[in-house]
Structures are given as structure tokens and as C-alpha cells.
Length: 605
Ligand code: F6R
Image 1: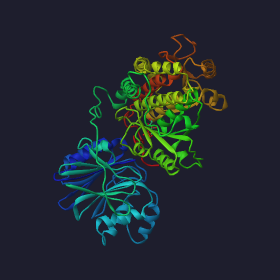
Image 2: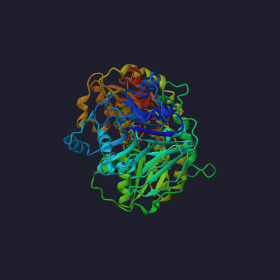
Image 3: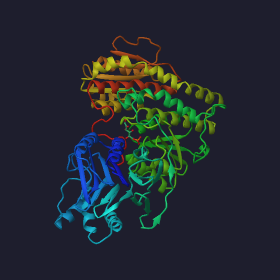
Image 4: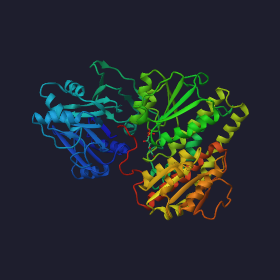
């Protein structure tokens, strides 16, 4: 879960490395570094903190050189400090690394016994030490191959050599790596997004591949050292990507973009003339399956949970949901009549990808709901359903969540229609209701001022609770996740009906409790649970759509959301929760777009 860049050029590379690292900061931002070959020597500069800090260091003391590598780190082995920051260099070789070397301790012990000294606490440094040894007898390519043979784990590498000033070597084992092409300049990057400002011509390494990048040529090898060719993709232009516009930060921009995100997504999947949902490329006939398994992590997992309710509501299928990090190690009984559906914004999440790989090995049908269509998960599943949300830069997922829910809702409806589980009239009616989502989201966003007042009231609390039933239970989980990751305020999400089985003990005077209660079949029951909270001193924020009616005088705050088809409430009730976490985090002066300890793309286990 770090970011890698490598450039071979006929001109100085450090400015472009810095610019690409800024784009890669979504992958990790606790330290940054680069190494160039300057006057025949490895010139390494690194620091704890953001790329901006590294840029200042370079401003005072520039790094010249036409060949270089760069890195942004999300610490796994060793605290974020200068010594542990990448690159890790010896006199003759310099390495940047994304991922984890699982046998690093073992290798380190052996190397230390033979007198090697380690400077850092990282797993990466074993690669530097091993390569330095191997380069005594081998050329760079064979030294890298031999070193790779000794490593276990999932990783991607960028390597430069003091005595071979013309090329960067890249290697992929599990973690993503892309190559970009330009004239007199070629690139290596953790993803195409980092390379987009420099080129739109991209190839992707597959697992086990290695590449040698010089300014006028890129060579690829597979794990057997055979030379191979790679397809070159032309990326689409995306002009909206990295600008905050007039917004304070990316997260609030992305929250307010959601009506447009929804409109774009609906346009992609609903045929304008016939008003039909189009899914042309499903890898299975929905009539021939009997189960759907939904798999994801974090927010993406929450969209899986909501889809379970939709699929159970609209179809006669069995539905299972799984957190990818559990699924990949469970003794799952794979079934040819099940469709395995993976949900991931980035399409690079290590656990989700590993779960997908497992399914592929078992020869079952897979489908992915992703935002990044060039991602590893998208490229390796049998069918891809993009959410069309555009780049999401804020680490906390907002518009991608809405996009994931939309695609999963459309898919649930379409499957029920194909299987004749829903009647045509109801199906058409649901599509018409769904088309109202963009304007309903805009309406929900109008609650921002009220939510600011609530945020001011609760931001000093020591904890909080989010309750809901039915569709609103996963929304409660998502509300709690957003609040904790953005504002570091402890937050628990619970099915409201579970309260008296334990969590009620947490309720004390003034504890903020968000109750999500749309007017659905659970409404009265959720309100009873709310009264139990109020009776114990909880400070209730009620989210409802009961038409502006005052429900109880003992409620501290009430937010009234627009009415909608009952199955669509997850979309509308998500908005105030996103705004709440945003404003609490603002009051607490947290780093909104880059919450502590997190990264946008979790490419390590
Ligand atoms: C929370 C958040 C994370 C991600 C999770 C999965 O706001 O963003 O919980 O949802 O890390 O990431 P993707 O969707 O990229 O697989």
C-alpha cells in the first residue's frame, strides 16, 4: 500500500517524479523519497511526511539525473521516519517497494549471520542487501530474477543501478504495476493514474513479470525469463480528475458531486429510449444460478450488505456476503451455480483481489463492480460493471459508495426481471423511481447547514452509536465507519434490534446516537429502540423521511429527508451521514482527505 514511480528519460526526471508521487499519495502519505543517478552515483533523498516536504528538500538541494525512482510510503514494517522511508539504497543499487516481503525476518537473520548490517526496520532492505550481493557475480536482470526467487509475499518493485545508468527494472508479484510510454521517456508506476499527466499509452505487468525500462525502449520478461510482448492501451482523457475547484477539499467536492455521479451511472445502464436496464456481458445466465456471493472490504463491503437486502427483496436467489479478508482464508464451498461478485472502488484492494484469484482457481464465474476499469480486479474478472464515478481522491469513499449501490441496485432489478421474479409493471415502476435519485440526492444535500450545527454539538463527545434496521442497518455501519475514519471519534454501528443484547450498556448521558429510521416496515420498531436509548440519556439524532412530523420531543435533532421508494432510502440516508462525519472532522481540525494511518488503495494484506 505504497506508491512507486520510475522514469528513464533524456532529461532531468526529479520534477516529474515529484509530480507523479503527489498523485500516488492516495496510496500512502507517511513518508516520501526518491533516488536518481547523479554524476554516476546513487543520489537518495527521503523524509517522513508528505511529498510537499520532499519537494522543499529538493528545492533547496536539487537532484539532477535522467534516471530515477520515487516512493510514497504507508508504513508496514517500522515507524514512518527518514531511515525507514524508501528508497533503500546501497552504494550500487536503490530499491522502492510496494507490498510485503513475508519472509524478510528469516532472510534478515541469515544475512546478519554472514555479517550484513541493516540500517532500517523495513522488510524492503533485505532486497537491497540481496541484490548488492548478487550484483557481484550477475548482471542486473539475473540478479533481480535470483533475488525474486528468494522472496515470499505480494509486492511490486522499482530498482536502479549505479553501474547501469540507462534503465529502471520493475517487477510485479501480486501488487499492481503499470508501464507508460512517451518519446525519449518511459515510465514505471503503481497505477496508470500516476502516469496519466505524462502519457496515455499504458501496459500492465502480470504476476511474475519483470520489465526493463530505458528512455527509448521497454522490454518485458515473464517469470521464466522469456521475453514477452505486452498490449499497449490508450487511456481515455479525464479532465475533471485532480482539481478541487472551489471546494475546501476533495471529500466535500466528491460529496456534492454525487447527484452527477448518479446521473452518469444511470445514463450508462438505463437505455434512454426503451427505459430498460442494460447489462450485456453477464458471465452467467441469471436463470441458471441459485446464489450470489458478494465480496468486498470496508465501504465496498457495506454496499455488498445493502445489495443482499435488494437481491432478497427482488429475486428468489440466496445471497451471501463476505469480507474479502475472511473469504480468502475460509473453507468456502465453491459452487458453479453461484455468481461471485466483487466490489471495489480502486480495483486493487489486496484482499479482494486474492478472493477473486481464489474464485478463478476454482473456475467459478466472477463479476466485478469497480470504479477503476484498468485495475487488476477489473482486468481479471469475467465481467466488469463500472460505476462511472470518475476519480475519487478523498481517502474516505463517498461518491464511489453511491455508485456501487446504484450498480448493485440495477443489477438486482435486472436479475429479478430476467428470472421473472418481479412483474414487468413493478420493474418499470422501480426504474422510474430510480431515475429520481439524482434530484433526491440534491435535496438531501440541502441539509448541510443543519448538520453543521449538529456536528458542533457532538464533536467533543467520546463516542457515538449508529442504529438502523433492514436497509438502514448497513447504512448505520457505513455512517459509523465514516465518522471514525475521518474524525477519529469512536463510533459503533448496530442493528437497532441488537441493542438490548449488549450495546445498550454503552448508553450514558449525552452519548450521541444516530437513529436511521425511514418510514418502512421497521419504522415503529426502530422508534421503540430509540426510546430505549432516550430513556438512558442518549442524545438522539433521528434521520427520517416521515414528512416533517415531530416524532418525539425528546429527540435532540431530527433531519427530514425526501420521501422515495422505500428500497431507495439507503442512497438518501447516506448523505447526512457523510456530511456529519465531514463536519465533525472539520471541527476537530482533522486532515479530511488524508486521515491518519489510512491510504486510498489497500494493496497489502
Ligand atoms: C472507507 C474506505 C475503505 C474502502 C476499502 C475498500 O471510506 O474507503 O473502507 O472502502 O478500503 O477499498 P476498495 O473499494 O478500493 O476495494
